[in-house]
Image (cartoon, rainbow, N blue to C red):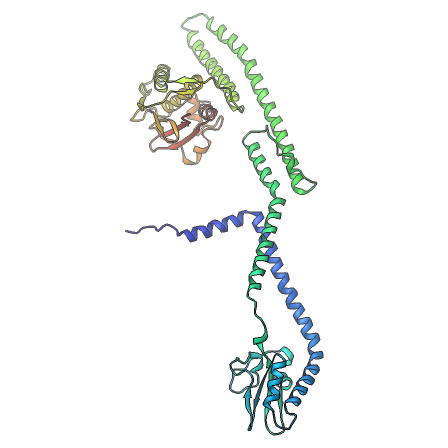
Length: 466
């Protein structure tokens, strides 16, 4: 059986670091600065080396040749090369001397490896093609001298006298890290207003316009300050438009109640005759639906307002659920496919939480109405589960109907959204039931979730246990 191996911690860390770099403008700016600094350093050093070497090469060659001639003349002052004079020169100057010939064969530093730039022209060594000083023949002409008696004197640099300081590399790396840290801190301070701007935009998106972007982020007439000011202005405009819409909707809803009440009263005063009764009952049902819609709209606006006022008191949820089930079943229409049962599964250890009983009753009634409508004709009745888990108190209502398409589940709690408009209109739904359930859950500090259970649909409301 094939098993899937989990990703190694190293790979996961690398992916997380890569994702963080690609999503952070601060880190990318620091990396761009570092790459630009490294590129400029390479270009400047390389260009300076080329400029100085090409300019000084021709001027330094005759001076070096004259100096080597003088040293060779000092070694061969008596005709043949003198080892004592060569030793005196190497003791006085950071040079190496190698003498090869029929009478004298001596090297001042035999254990020191001949550098590559001195190997040119040797038949027993690999050729090192180098263009400094004009090629290998120039080096032979500059640093090597032939005496009249057949000896060859070769000069070089004594690398042992140059003190190597590896600590300087560590100091350079430490300075580089310090500069990188300073650059990061500066970029972080420079872009810090972006964090406050992002938090303010998220607050505005969630409907909280009470706290604008702090004025400390508007520290100057730069692009970030202008962006923060623009977002604050946009948030104020959106808040004013939403408040105007809410005020208009509340005013219309309140104004409609009076004529609806008068129309219902006039309808009930109609004579009860065989000819009038069908129209009278139909008109009363329509007026009742309109009154329910207005009540739902008013409740929706009340719960949509931030810090919705809740009348909290200890609630025995199991007893309340039994009352709501009885009320909902009593209002079921008389049809052959109408359900007359709801399965209640209540855990024995349900705590008595401080809830708003009227809003919880509304939540249960809407969930049960929704499950009875969409579970009509199913083999099993709807189920109401009340249980406690690590997240808090869970209220779940499930039907065994056809469910809804998966792509429409995120929209079910939107106002006036109906996945099957023709069927829900015929059954009396207006598209506000699940919206009110979600608002009631959020007003209590809880969560609202919908999922397909195949068959059927399950709506889960989780309320905090405190």
